[in-house]
Amino acid sequence: MNGSRIPGLVLPTLFLLASLVGLWWYWRHRGDT
Image (cartoon, rainbow, N blue to C red; front, side, top):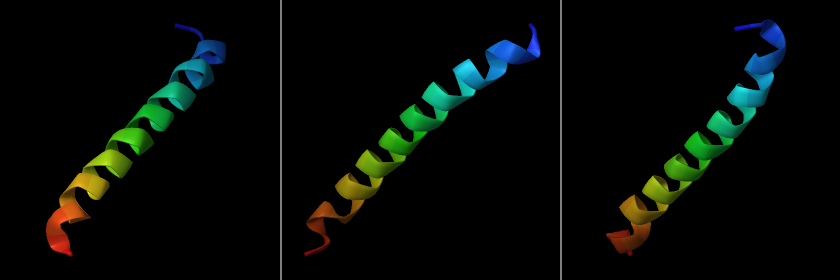
């Protein structure tokens, strides 16, 4: 694997992780009210 392909994999992975964490945080704090 060459270095030029790594950013193309990291960016979508970070975006997906951020989405999952956001959803998890939302579901976790949804019933706290």
